[in-house]
Image (cartoon, rainbow, N blue to C red):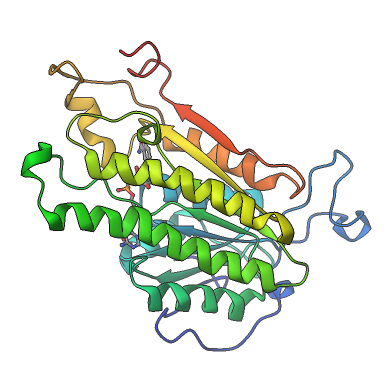
Length: 298
Ligand SMILES: NC(=O)c1ccc[n+]([C@@H]2O[C@H](COP(=O)([O-])OP(=O)(O)OC[C@H]3O[C@@H](n4cnc5c(N)ncnc54)[C@H](OP(=O)(O)O)[C@@H]3O)[C@@H](O)[C@H]2O)c1
């Protein structure tokens, strides 16, 4: 666990002292002299900007939380497992009182009341929200379509679609209401937002649906300076993709190992997307293990 700037907040009782963002902001050298927080090279300063990362207790979410904090963002870590969030916070390293703040809010994104409490905690602690990395997700049970149970289907829809919607809606409400208005939502899609793997209908359908969320959020966000983009990842080495190294079923029925890449390579892309001024947006991006079977259908 880090120093004073790392704290856990209960999503169910999101109260407590309200801090102004300047409490824990890392001031970039000379930031006061910058024009509207924009540096000489046109890149907005992220000092004092607040990001929520869902699924922050492992894999891509953890790597993205680390990269955002290293870039100077205040980071809110959300996910169901409090101990996993605490480990992510520990990995972010000790931060002094003048460094980026990191708070942990254990949250199940499938539960509307917990999602509401997460974003209430963000508003209470920081007074605003600049970025949601909508990342929490599950692959679900891999099974032949005719053997998939209703519960198998629903549990994936609950996390990947309903959970992503609930978080996006709460972020949208916060970004629309705040002053200055606006912010950015980055949805974590997948190559499965484009093409399926065998026996993955719930995952594939929900990741295709994520593209619909991204497009609707982008359109509905226009009047309020809310930008929305989507990152489609292929084979980052995480718990979810453990089978890529040992062998996973291919479209032709074979089982074969596939190349993977580091989650940190995904995180660098998110930091870039997040740092753009709100007038610019990476609408869709694909980051994948270079030689994995996708392009050329194999
Ligand atoms: N790795 C890849 O190559 C790849 C490729 C394409 C897309 N993605 C996407 O990337 C995202 C992260 O996956 P990952 O690869 O990093 O796998 P992971 O390590 O299994 O991460 C999934 C995260 O989602 C969280 N989560 C699951 N259900 C949740 C719920 N109901 N409420 C809150 N959080 C929940 C988990 O935390 P708790 O269990 O603590 O809740 C976990 O931290 C997913 O959306 C996945 O579809 C990954």
